[in-house]
Image (cartoon, rainbow, N blue to C red; front, top):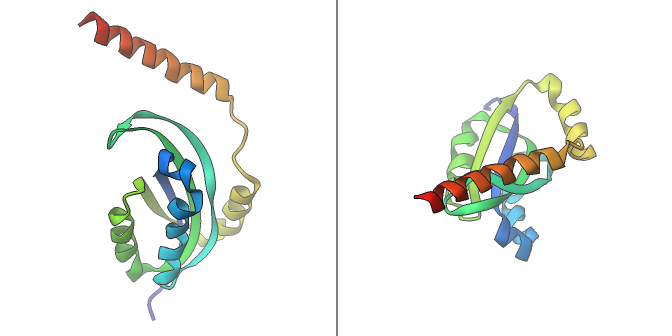
Length: 138
């Protein structure tokens, strides 16, 4: 039997499709993990925000966070399935130390920490204004 590890997956989902049908866009993440014999500990929306730069012509993304256990030999298959999903703009899967699993799961269940959202938003707005000014100057 192959060794099972704990993983964190962060997915940037198509926010337009997610707004229309959240379950149809986010549901396949957990279903794919489970179909390959994995166990999903947490799978939830983390945040929706404007992307720092366009990815595949998308300017906004819905960030989806998942913590799961799966056999190490299934990770390559899992990544391939996520690459084929058109609603996943980008994703990253990292292996975690099993000792951190419970702490991270509890943190994810509690939701994102309240960050100075206005400051972050203002930074992006200022960058957009600068980019627009450069484009109109050319």
